[in-house]
Image (tube, rainbow, N blue to C red):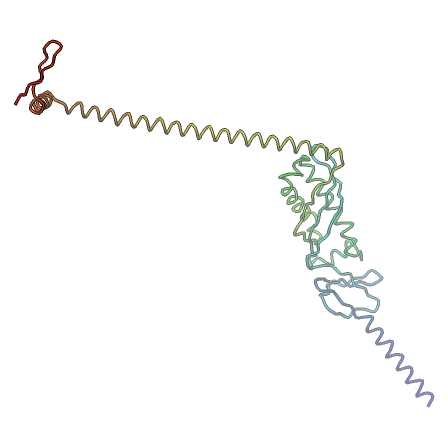
Amino acid sequence: MKKSVIGAIAIGVLLIFGAIGLIMSLTKVDNGNVGIVYSPNGGIKEKALGQGWHMVGLLDKVNEYPTKLRTVDAKDLTVSTKDGKNINLDLSYSYKIDASKATDIYKTFGSVPVEELEKGYMERRLLETTRRVVSKYNLLDIYGEDATEASMNIQKDFAKNVDKLGFIVSDTTLGAPKADAKTQAAIDDRVKVSQENSKKKLELENDKIDAQRKEVQAQGEATKRQIEATAEAKANETVSKSITTELLRKMEMEARIQHGWITTQGANTVVTDGK
């Protein structure tokens, strides 16, 4: 009887430990991630685990890497512009891991959590790229119309820099540069001068347009007068050609018939009826 009880207890204990071991061997890879299984002695399984539940060795652990886009903010990166001004930049970028290279990433960095990769390797590559790109622009360029171009160049170079290891960068956003008080005052002054120059340039353009408009109007008036004068001259020429000696005699005869003969004697004028 005692042996039976002891045997039952032993079986129960084994079942409990077996259940515990089974539970401990179960691991879940979160949605949008892949998992690399590794053991404490440094061995790894070449095939990455997809999302969901998996059975692994009792002592095995899993390092997860994101295969869906993950956005990271990098704050206060100190860089220098082409004209030697130091500024701080905030950048954000989105990236994911190439699932086919997840094992290679683990072999390169070991069991380092992805958050530490972002703060370490990724941020160093981003800072290196940003310094190289920003050094090609003057301070006002980064504050102005070239900010978008600089952001695109940072993304392009950054993506190329980390792609070989399996990090796929799809977007980079450059925040507004932050300068010290002295540099900011210089920027404000240069911006003010630039705005004044732009205003003067606009005024000159408006004056030029107004002058051109007046010139066109004057040319139009001159052309109109020329056309009118030409038309009048042609009309006079037509009338002149139409008045002949015969026409004048005819008009004289008609006038005499209608009004009579006019005879002038000294200071007196006598109109006689010519009928």
